[in-house]
Amino acid sequence: MRAALKSKDKVTLGTLRMVLTAVKNEEVSGSAAHELNDDEIIKVLTRQAKQRREAAEAFREGGRAEQAEAELAEEAVIKRYLPEQMGVEQITELVRTTIADGGFSGPGDMGKVMKAVKPKVTGRADGKIVADIVKRELSS
Image 1 (cartoon, rainbow, N blue to C red):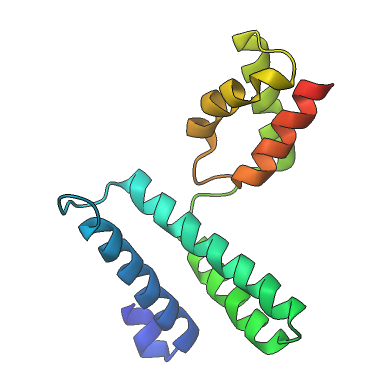
Image 2: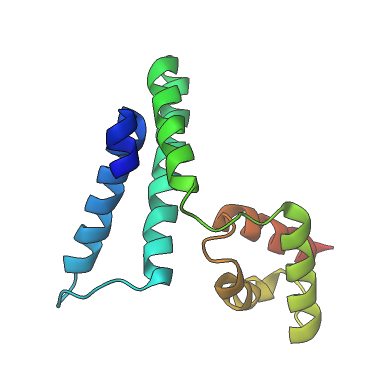
């Protein structure tokens, strides 16, 4: 934040403030306040990035390209603090390995495969992409 303040980077500064607020809100939500661990912070960051991406799509569909670009710029700032995202090939290989190791077969086992794969990709892959790959692999 200091670097953004010094360089007068309003996008980065505003985005970091929003993210810090989201983290603080998450810390005080629930029955008792607690400090978030790294995995929980990654979940908050992932959720924030997804919100920006979805907002950009909505603005673009509504003909507000300038606002969509602002949302995408905020998403880019958030992504700097997330682990490197897995590629489709990496996810596919992980899903295939999980299916083989677990002996899963058919679309009926999708929930079981997702449950096994999710901890391995949390924060590193979009859940929708993972679900699509699992569905495709179980159908073939």
